[in-house]
Image (cartoon, rainbow, N blue to C red; front, side, top):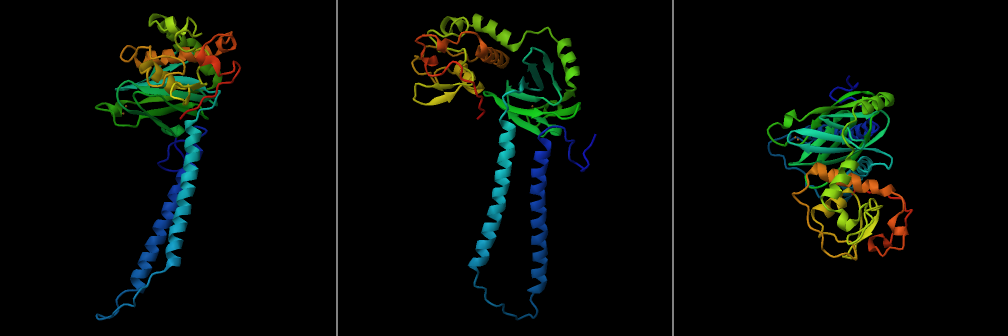
Length: 339
Ligand code: CUA
C-alpha cells in the first residue's frame, strides 16, 4: 500500500498526519523562498546588468527598513516552525496514562520486545488497532533507532537509559520496522515488522502466546534473589532502604534538597548507581548492581517496582517512620512524566 503522494510512506497512526502536515509546511516554505529568491535573482541580473563597458554604478547607501523587514519575516517564520515542531514532538514523546506498555531492548542486531503480559517477540511487534501503545526502550550495546515509517514513530534507543515513545495505529496491517541509526555491520539487516491487528484478533494472539512469565513476575523473583528484600522489604514496604511500593511516578525528595520524579530513568539509575541521587533520610549503603543485571533484568525489576503501585495497604498511610513515604499522600495518583 502506498500513500497518494509519491515517496511518502503510508499513513497508519494517529500522528502521521500531524508529522506530514508539518513536513509539508516546511517543504512549502522552502519551495516558496527558493522560487522567490531565484526569480528575484534572475530579475536583478537582467535589470541591473552592465550596459556599457565604462559604466559606473550608482552608490548604494543601504536601508534599515529593508534590513528590518528581512530579519523580522524570517524570524516569525522560523518561530512558527519551532512552535509547531515542539508541539508535535512533545505530543509524541509524552505517553498518555492509559497506554499499553511494551518493553523494547535493542542489540546488535535485533529488536527484543516483551509485552507487559509476558509475551516475548523478536523483530516483530503485535499490537491492537486503535489503542495507545507506549514503548519503553533501551539498548544492550550501542545506539539504535526504533523507526516505523508508517507511524512516523522514530526514536533513538540509547544504552544506559530509557527512551519512551508512544503511538496509536489506525489501520490493521503489517508495517516495516527499521533501525535508523548506524549500529555496525548488520545495521541494514536490523529490521522487522509491526503487525497491527483488530482487538479481538490481538486478544487471540495474546492468549495463544502465553507461557513466559510477565516481566513483573520475573522482576519479583529477581528482587528476592538479588537480596533487594532485605532492605526494601519483602513487598517493597521499605526498611533500611526507601519504600518502593507506590514509588513509581511519585515526586521523591532527595538528600541534595532536590526533588525527582521516580520515573523509569530514576529507578534504573538507582539500581545501577544508587549513590547518585540518594533519597532524603537514607545513607549510601546500597551496593551498585552494575554488571550484575542485564538490560532485560533491569526492565523486569522496573516492571515489578511499577506493579507495587497498586498493592494493598500503602506503607505511607501507616504510621511507619519511613522517610521516603512521609511526604506522599497514599492516594496520590501517580503521574508519569517523561523528560
Ligand atoms: Cu541497530 Cu542500526
